[in-house]
Image (tube, rainbow, N blue to C red; front, side, top):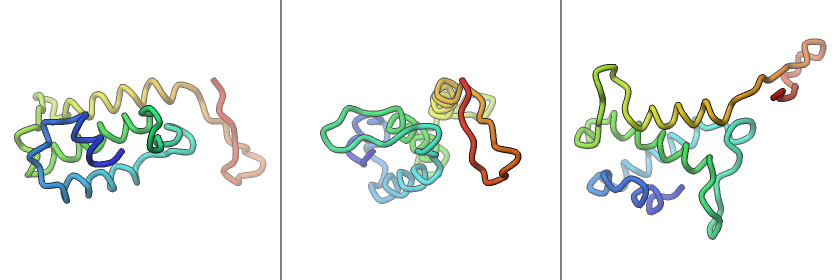
Length: 114
């Protein structure tokens, strides 16, 4: 997800400094496991993927927690942003299944069981 796509999906951050938005987009992208959990980001011209949606919510969460994101914070009493709740819902929907490792090999290889 690029900054234009992010601001279209989350217009409440339109007044946030573009360099901060971009920094949080990069930070959030580094935390997403595109290999085993989310699949790839979309490429130009493709429809948005689940990875793009997760990327947007995680970025919005990070921005809302920053001092510059105070106006978009939307944090209820439990301290979790609305964006984090959406991200966590995507995690639950996307990661249903169990990853079984190869205990004899210990190489970290394994397979998903659903």
